[in-house]
Length: 175
Picture 1 (cartoon, rainbow, N blue to C red):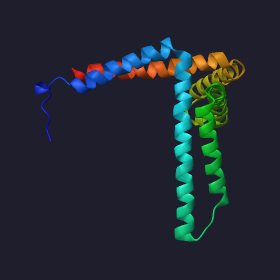
Picture 2 (picture 1 turned 120 degrees about the vertical axis):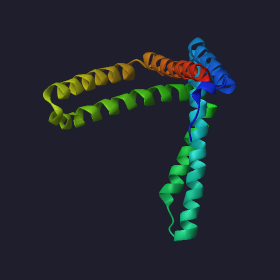
Picture 3 (picture 1 turned 135 degrees about the vertical axis):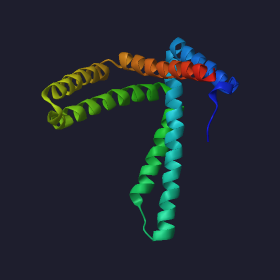
């Protein structure tokens, strides 16, 4: 179907979502510790829901396939306990979240280095660029791992950047 963009009307909903997103970005930067606690709380809720899903899935496996999965139940219980920990102990969960972020960067940097040899087929300059960037990522990952305050700041910055860019795009699209 052809859309006539010359007769497009102002999108109030997109504009309001854009403004809310900009405000959320401002709040994330202004209250970084609260932002990290909120992220940890959301993660805790997600992990609890995932654990409940795994319990349901395990029961369905038993019901329909006649197969019992003790590992599924064990994993579900561990997920639920971790989720409760993240909700109840926000101080511990923020530190765990920060280290998870740093370890994620470390694993990703190692993966980049191990797969960089495949980029050699695209040319030596491309391969060297990938290796140099992977080494820089590895250094950055170690810095984050041994400096949790910086890692927390990076998480807050990424979250604020996400909200700001989403807000700006929402406002632009509203017009």
